Figure 1: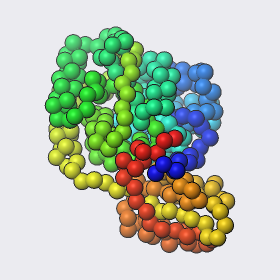
Figure 2 (figure 1 turned 135 degrees about the vertical axis):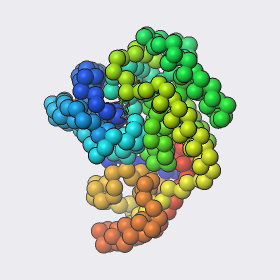
Figure 3 (figure 1 turned 45 degrees about the horizontal axis):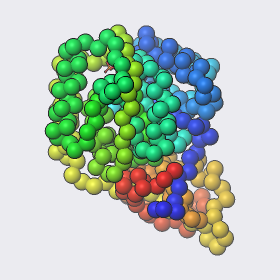
Length: 327
Ligand code: UDP
Ligand code: MG
């Protein structure tokens, strides 16, 4: 896929996805800080996913987004489904080239953003680490440190990747890779981080760890015993079911006769938000990671009506194909 490149619907430079469950006490300082970065707010597609909160999280975020982030979005999940599900919904809505995920409590200092974005120029995924050289942590309890280290050792045993800290909430991805990875993910809770990195590693994504400054913020939603046990079980369940290689299906559009497709905006509006767009010569491929092949056949029928001067074919790509595209 050497002559192919991705297309993005949004003019924003970066997307930031924040999962939020009952965060009325913790999320405002983060949104205010993000609004005062050197990167202007118009260049940020801020996506807050309210994971079925029962407090004022969504009201506060809606207000802050409308005041500060013209390209911001609030996604509301009907019920509390876990951090993994919230991130999956947020990543599906991303429409800029790169995405950073971070926790609502701003435990990771935002100074990690610049090195993360720089890292994405050469890598598909950048992982914030609280344990590699150069990192600083404050207020992490010894019991939590023990459990996090134990979980990382357990992952090293079960996987071949050598990530020192899978569980830090701060990570950055090239968006098309993130969309493919998160749509393949099945873990709902906190073990999703490990699942995503394992999937990425097994499909030739390059992963860079960067040190972060991390401060424990009171109000964690994690129950150490319950969530550690469920993370452990969820990861084992993922590994037992992860043998199948997933193809991502989509539609390849080619304009009949003359070169290229004129109405690219129309294409972005026609397909679902989670779509990945790839231009290969005069063809545009629109991959729809969450949609089954049978549904895509129905969409292809509608494409003939909407774009009568285009030829449309069903196409498919692997995650490895996406990782091989340079931009
Ligand atoms: N979170 C979520 N759904 C949940 C639990 C947590 O979206 O069911 C979010 C939470 O709002 C926060 C992030 O996941 O943005 C990490 O949670 P927390 O800070 O409680 O975890 P910790 O940092 O203590 O590991
Ligand atoms: Mg936290």
